[in-house]
Length: 197
Length: 257
Image (tube, rainbow over all chains, first blue to last red; front, side, top):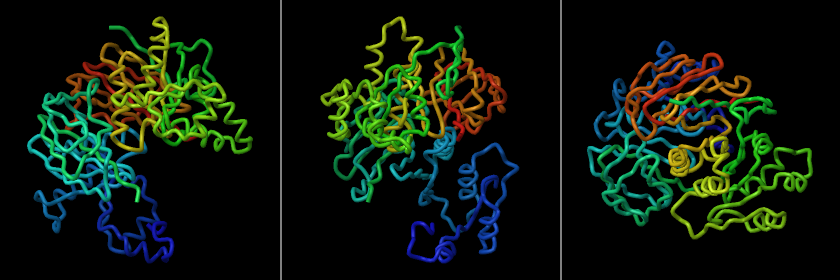
């Protein structure tokens, strides 16, 4: 964080950007970092005994179950930085978290792209913020083939179209305008590029 | 069911002479930062292709991997055999430079239906004699990271060409398909890869997968997105075996040397 505010004092920046919770199996966090945030009042939740779930999974579980001030209804949206890139098995594990918690809004973000799940239980309207995202986008049937998907608002729309790995998936698509609609018989992954500003 | 052998010998400084399987390597460079071991992949490959902007990467970044050498010498030494793609990313100076050195330029700008990687794989597929296809292994640098829809499109290429050996490589990981048509033996090159690995049922759930050689083996186990997938697994020893009712994606970490 201090590197993103080079004109400010590093300590000031660190105090301002103090996490509410640090959670996980604690095998990566440096002791000095842990002590620093603990002294500032950050809640430390050590889950080193739980090797069955990823760190992201643990955090999503915490937010869903224990965060008292966070609204658990459909108004909750969990933004995740750092879920993409790096070790590929980690990236896939993080992607799977979206499918495991398909009733929650979870957005995975990198410098280049954002991705989230469009559950099959709903029709979807995606309002494109053209100042910050697009135009490159895709709809990906990760877990299960889609027998029928339909869209509007894309350069190459789907019209009751089948999609599957080994066949057609919608990548290198383009948003046209400011609204995209999607309906499908399966959970689809939506991805859109983030503009370099 | 036939056995298929896999081994990341392309990450070794030299490939042992009597190593099985004996493979011919082709390298495809896509438009992302070159992995630090790109010169090693280049050395093992008999055919080197750049997909469009991948040529920019070779031109700009190969010299950076040899800082003590003259940039022009490096560029001449690392000259692709083919540049293929829709040509909307390659810089004119780069195109002219390689063209003047004899690189074959294949302009596919009229074809907007397939990704640049797909075009390169198709080229290699058409170019390689049928007799050699089963001993061919296509190494791809720059397929992961960057735009996520591109990454997914590149992953789909593995499934579209499931009878070809294609390995996607980043600095951190390598991935390839284990087709359901075979039992698989993966010989782990412990000096350069592992121990972190995963088996991912992309595209279709797996009703039954079985492994040996992993810390958490699968035993006729179901895998699917939304349920169990094998990520954050660990290779134990030097051989992993896999059989499954579906095509699985194998991924293993690459060691930082």
